[in-house]
Amino acid sequence: MKTASKGSQRASIGVIGGSGLYDMEGLTRVKEVRVATPFGPPSDAVVIGDLEGVRVAFLARHGRGHRLSPSEINYRGNIYALKKLGVERIVAVSAVGSMKEALQPGHVVIPDQFVDLTKRRIGTFFDRGVVAHISLANPVCRDVAGSLAEAARKAGATVHEGGAYLCIEGPQFSTRAESQIFRQWGVDVIGMTNLPEAKLAREAELCYATLALVTDYDCWHPEHDAVTVEAIIETLHRNVDLSRRILRAVVPALREDRKCACGRALQAAVLTARDRIPAATRKRLSLLLSRSLGT
Image (cartoon, rainbow, N blue to C red; front, side, top):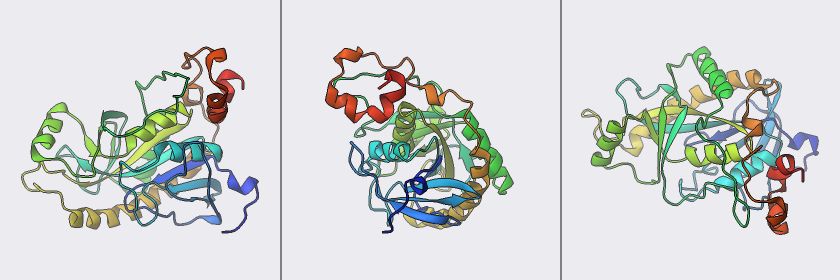
C-alpha cells in the first residue's frame, strides 16, 4: 500500500457502495487508506481519489468480495472513518426490494424516510457516560437527495423521489406473511443496511442520502413470489453500471459549501453535563464533540 500525503487522504464526499458496488470506476490520483477508529476498523480500506475534479472517499459497505452480512457491518467504524477523512456528505448506494407495483426492478428510489426493524445493530455513538438525542424526523439531507434525483434523471434512470425505506435485520429475505404486512404499512422499499448509517451520519453531523436501486419485488408480488439471489444478481449487474453514471453526475453538484442544518445536528443534542462526561469518553468522541462542546 502506498503512503499517501496528508492532503491526499482528505475528501469532502463519501460514497458507501452496497451489494454489487465494491469499487468506484473513474477515480484518478487514487490512494488506499486504512483508517483506525475508536469503534474498530471499517468494513474495508477506504479508497480516495478524484472524480470529476472532486476528492471522493469510497467504502465498500460489505467489504470487497462481500464478506460481511448486514448484521456484521461495523456501521460506527464506517461512518467515523469517513468523518475522520473530512467527509461532509455521504451518498449511500443500496440494492432494495420494491413494495409497490410502480417501483419496478431497475428503477431508482431516493427515500426520505426510514422504518427500523433491526434487532442487533448499534445505532449511536453516544454511550459510556454521555447521552445525546438528535432529531431524526427528517433523516435524509434534502439537498443531497435532490441532487441525487437530478443526477439520476440525467443518467437516464426512472426516478422516484421520496418514500419510506424499511430496514430489516436479515440476512434472510422476508416471509410472504411479513411482506404482506409491510405492504399494509405503506412502505416503499425494503433493505437491510441504510437506517443505522442514517442515524450515525446525523450524529456525526454529516449529510446523508440513499441511492436505492430496485432489484426485485420482495415476495409479495403474485408473479414474483420468491426472491432468488440469481434474479437479484442479474438486476444488480445492470444497476451497478447505472449507479456509476449517477455518481459521476452527482459528485460535481455536491462540491459547494453546505447550506443545510445537518452540520449542526449536535448543537443542542448532548444532555449530559460537561463536567459529568468521563475523560475517556470525551477523548473517544472528540472528533464528534469538538464543535458542540468546544473541546
